[in-house]
Amino acid sequence: MEQLEGKICVEAALRARQRRIHLLVLRNSLHAETSAPLIELAQARQIPVKLVSPDELDAMAHGHTHGGVLALCSPRPHLAIDQLFKHLNSCGFPLFLLLLEGIDDSQNLGFVLRTAEACGVDAVLLKKHLWDFDGAAVSRASSGAFERLPLCVFDQAESLLPRISSLGVRIYGCIANAQRTIYQVDLTQSVLIALGGEKRGLSAAVRGYCDRFIKIPMLSAAGSLSLSHASAILLAEVMRQRLSRVETFQDPNQA
Image (cartoon, rainbow, N blue to C red; front, side, top):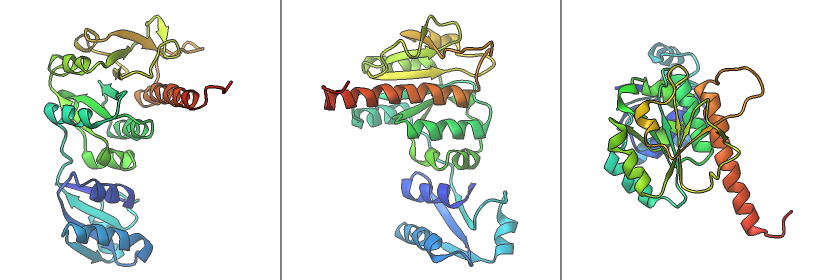
């Protein structure tokens, strides 16, 4: 059982319909403009709603910024590999995937997922042995993106990456000593961006399936960026290239 706290992630979970929500708890003094949409969503799924006093809700909450909204629910399920490919086959091409290794902080993962959704990532892939997170903390940090964004947790690279490649997806591994920067490759095609952790980088298993290695150029001696910042730069560049290509295609006379 997990406890989601805050209107944004609770509403995202209600709308995404990925979790089984057992109870919606609302502070009885909430404004109707906040509570009414949540109650409506809960009633549509026959989820019980409990109105409680501010003191009672504070006693139930794990944090202090719940805003008067809690939900008791099952963990958010992950996509199995076959479910992932069913989802990818329903997506428009070119595909945009993100593979993460080495995340050890729920908040950082939430930040990465929030950026991934904003930049148009179709699915996020994460190694199973790395998944040891509080789903509620991830959901809150992601501003609800965790509830909506397809997430596949896999065991071994060889069980997934060859099938990804068979879809025509080019796998780009981000490493510090790569010869090409993210600005020197075409990221408008179907791509998977693979990012390693700050300490160990990409594993040899994932590197073995990469079509090309790329790096984020730096103008100082900084050895690396945090995973959340590196992912934001990489994903924004993919989005920029794709938007630029669409705009150019729509207006071929544009300078």
